[in-house]
Image (cartoon, rainbow, N blue to C red; front, side, top):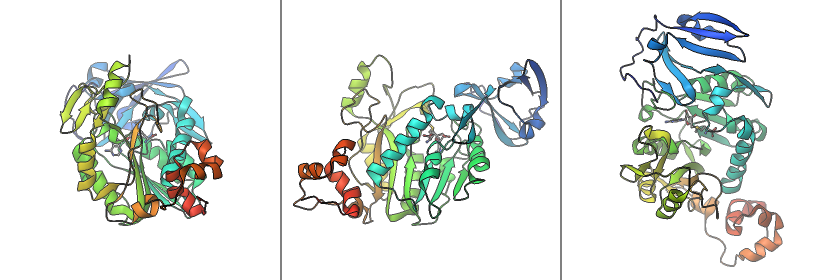
Length: 383
Ligand SMILES: C[S@@+](CC[C@H](N)C(=O)[O-])C[C@H]1O[C@@H](n2cnc3c(N)ncnc32)[C@H](O)[C@@H]1O
């Protein structure tokens, strides 16, 4: 990350700068004031020139420059590449921000939905809120899943992703809405003018059934996470649930990770219960101890609805549900724990349940979890 100057301001002049677009072997010069309306085309190679001026502006992962034009921050990728997906034209630069690419885009999205189904229970008429919705990887799955009574609310700090989702998803699916939070983040929004602490989630109190965050708490620290958790406690319905992936800093996991030739190590203590992988880009990957998670969850008025789901990031694959660890949270004062994950009937027999329901065994799910999340509602036999 190149942060040559920390003194960017919306009034910084970009007069000395212009864009040079290489298209079909020809170059086109574009003045900066035309950037907001310029029609990029698939295959455009983009240079911000002159380099001596361009290098004064922040450069983030995957080579995008960030500049202000007329007081508005813009992300300028090196290439404008379009990838077709489910009838949408996605921008590859924004797809890369998910941490994956087009090669595993659909697979990861389907896995996310399957996890939400399995561990939180979903209904097509639910109101779901996703923080860090990105280019809409999960939203595309929810388009197929939610019915017209269902509602999807996405929020993110990457303006270009939110703008893209509004133009392309909301225009066709009005029950899908997207909101930009202009929060400063060294990897995603280096010219942001606010902090996440300034934001109020765009939802009424007690109005949201499920909240999802995948690979978001892996890039944030205590104050921002606690703020979001407090907002979750406010907007969740009494029986609402949150799925938040994160890296759990546990001795067994970090010791195992240390032995792997590549991958995350979290060798650097950052703050009380927080460890980082890279001192150069502190927010690139953040791990959190159980103690720190418990502190934040408790302060926010939430509680763990079940033990953490483990991830295979450290190389320990036994019992892992996906790559990162995850917390499933409910309001501390709500009936969620009893409703969704409460006590099993005293005569519940897990082995018998698996014999009676081979689909549960095949899914590899714990019989008790399955009964509490799905089986009870579906009226499944357990004895
Ligand atoms: C690794 S990407 C994951 C995107 C998406 N969840 C997915 O799986 O496709 C992390 C996302 O979190 C967003 N993000 C980072 N900090 C955030 C914050 N404080 N509030 C909301 N979104 C944030 C980034 O802009 C980015 O879109």
